[in-house]
Amino acid sequence: MKVHARAAYIRQAPSKVRLVLDLVRGLPVDEARHVLDFTNRRASDPVRKVLESAVANASHNHALDPSELRVVAAFADEGPTLKRVKARARGRATQIIKRTSHITIVVGDGHEDEAVH
Image (cartoon, rainbow, N blue to C red; front, side):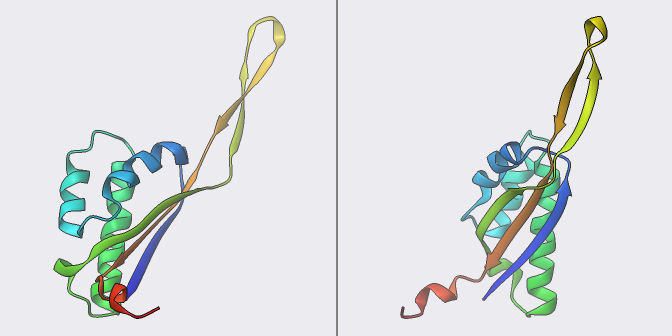
């Protein structure tokens, strides 16, 4: 069984969030927590929150054992872009692009791989 959690409109570029998600994809949940504890990136905090939410959804809503869960999928989609203006020399202005992310983490117990396709 697969259970997911999602955080939307995280104020960080999706490319930076994907670097952290690449570290935890495919790992057991306990090992993924350990990796996120020692990852020195700002995106590790929201990724950890989404991971904990997915584990809580699996244990509370579907009665799955949290120790048997692993990160099946993890991805960051691009959210809306905030556009701001910065004043420059000689009365000009440049645009500042502030990107947002939608983080999704899917955890599962690994038993769906045994099904015949």
